[in-house]
Length: 156
Image 1 (cartoon, one colour):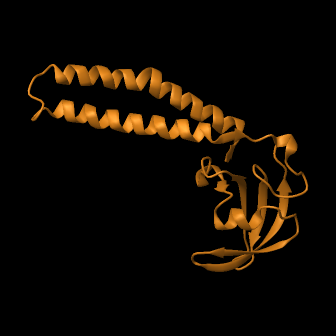
Image 2: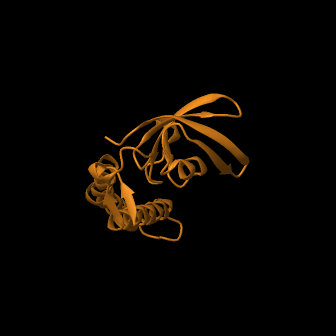
Image 3: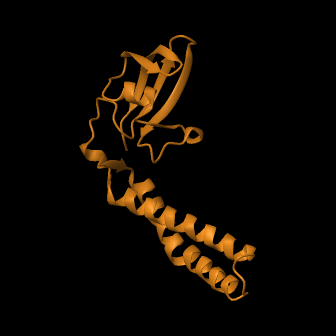
């Protein structure tokens, strides 16, 4: 079971609908046109359309599975005093004294440029369930380090 924010769930639904209603029909038309050109063995347009069709079908199936196995996070049911999904956390890396701020999200929403880290990442997993003021050891592939949780904004 995956948990998604309402925003991300809606983005996935919109992408899926666009693929099914817009892109796939275009690919199907391109495939028909390429097939009408004759010899398929040396027909580049036909092979390109088949590749595009395969990619579109694969993406559609993937998104359908994500939606099938996902639930929208009820932010009212999440704890307000502990770090959970959609919590915005400011912490300090005690080895470098560098402050960082991230929102904890599912791996389908992870985007470092937007300040969103996965709850399955080493830092995200170490933070889950913790409280403001705690010092946490993070076990990362590059080695263990400690962080101090400076502030926690509950999910909104």
